[in-house]
Image (cartoon, rainbow, N blue to C red; front, side):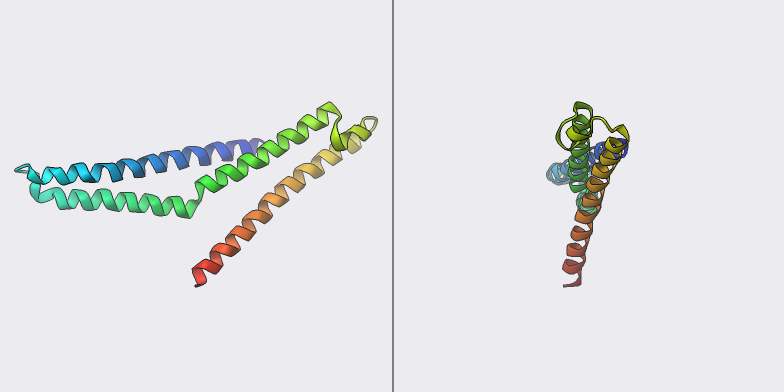
Amino acid sequence: MKYYSQSSSYCKKMYHRLTILCLVFNGIVPFVMLLDQVRYIGPFVKYLVAAFSSAAGILTAVLALKKHRELWVQYRICLEQMKRAVNMFFMNAGEFAELEDNPEKRQKVLFAVFENISVSEHNQWAVVEQKDDKIEDR
């Protein structure tokens, strides 16, 4: 659970940071275009525009490549599923209700639930990666 919590937080922060930087760079370009009228800055405007536009393009590509938003959502879903399983475990509810007298079996069932959540998360990413590979092959 700690892994999914930390990974979700990291991906959320990276997604927000990169998106904000991209927006800032895209927002600066029109302002820099106005500097063309300033006497000493004028000749360098095209270089500034190119730099900010390139930076925005690179950040957009990094966002698409790293998939921080998708990972953030997926890790958060797994974490919430695990929290639900832990709550059910401690409340002796759901699949743990019948195992109240057998603590060892309850722990094994909890482990199995966690393992199923983890495996389903990995399987979903395998499907996504296969789709991405097929798109790249076209």
